[in-house]
Length: 369
Image (cartoon, rainbow, N blue to C red; front, side, top):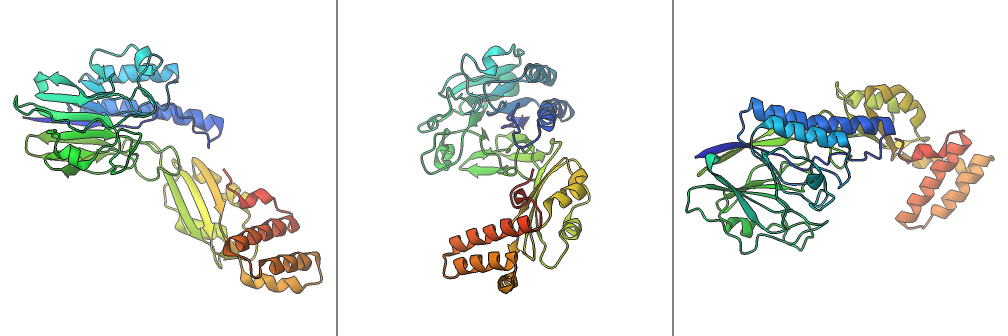
């Protein structure tokens, strides 16, 4: 007996995308809905038999009507059993999307904060799962063991994190998985894909989020196609995302910042959202306005961050008989003997002051969306 299924989690549909302008944030939410369509197409193309969605499909209990309509249509298009274990963002309650939506008959939503099972004899599987009923959940696996006497494959669909310490998010421990009698645990909550892991005779994984929503979710994101038998398991990550978040660190010491950035940019960036962090030693703060004007069209969205340092030899100008010289002299005196943290603040003050003297804007030293 074997089964091939889709394991996906943490879509966070209808995220606010607060770091983006309102128009682009709306586009990103519509692109999130396209993830659902690509998942439905993947089920058909790969002839998958089951879909497991362990939580945080929605970013909150509030959602747009278009999102619910798309979700139901795509679930209907999949045409295979779809099981959902609500997580800490989309926890189950009377006002949750799962309670409001007219979900198709092939969808089952776990609604209790205790493990219960759904038997699908035609597929030879039993799926165990549970729901968050609020923004947290206790550990649900201690003492649990699924029976293997009837020859069914036992799968778990749960939103939780692997940890040895106490956690408010349905903590999962490897020793509990090893003792569970499960063949595979489809987990959600962790936004970085784990790859296929094993505890005792139990395979488990987190697919990560299928599309990044911020610079803490950089790089390629995926869903997982899992093939499971009684003795073996394989996992294939599949990228269905439209855009990626990327952070590019550029040392501009001795270089024109624009040329330094161009020398490190990949060929294809127009679809992606970038943060470019400038570092190194400079004579004066980089002109981020100029950089944005020259680079902005190369990305879907661009954020520039200035982490450069003033050259030490600039303090020599503190002896000049000028406003600049007097300004630098005062700051140099304040920096002498100061703690490293204090010196960093003084250096930042120098940046602001020199930017003002050069008729630049202070905001150029801050994150610039």
